Length: 374
Ligand SMILES: [Zn+2]
Image (cartoon, rainbow, N blue to C red):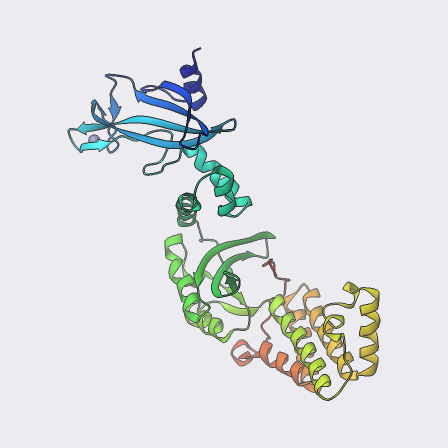
């Protein structure tokens, strides 16, 4: 087997395509690269890209693609690509089996870029393969756009809508995620759009028909307590019950504990070091923090009460049934309202906001959320 036939076999080329030249060359900077020249066998007929009818070549255009490296050397395929003169479709450039139209990379090189892009930033992939990130982004956008367009949303019944910060926190985006709490499947990102207004929720609803789905099939929307999202969900997902997910509710409870601590501080109380000692569950703390937490609870009954409230709220998610979880939460709200801790009362208000329209059931997802990333 000669060298050209060897590369032909390695590329998986079949007639009428042939490797007609191969060799290492040097670029302007002296770096070696492998160049493989490909041609259509003289006189061979090639299919019209529109109808597939075999036609003879009309003329040729020289094109080049970056391919997978040959060992440490960058590799390029260079081909004289025929144009055919189809009786029906006129003069057309034929398709090549190793690349998609308009791309300067072979399909295998694009597959490598996509595989690497899952693991690292595109700029890092660009540095690794020696291409500009602009060129690689074009590849990523193409395949991500294609995969997203093909996504089937017909089984989506529970959505989670949340805001996320992009560009080091300077801009916000809204993400919509498909939750399957009943199957335990991991959450699937469906939609992302700039901003965090009610209009973003509308855009999620508007995107559904293109994915074989309708807003009315969504029975539950989990979210933070943002009024804009609540309003958006009420308008654009009319069949869905809005629920507040665990992370955001527990964050409110944590903020309420912080607020109690700050109030004590403002009134001259000694709560030094309390910010971290009072955060999260006691079991998660190191010994000195545990001790400080116990001391603060003993010194200030307000802190003790705020922490007890926080723990009791957390127990809501230990109930597996929605009925008992709802009952537990109602009890909790009554306790919070009576606690004479203003921040805890505010949490109670927030989670039961609009409760009249929901038969008095506080709106918290009974299962732990599986949004991840928090
Ligand atoms: Zn044709």
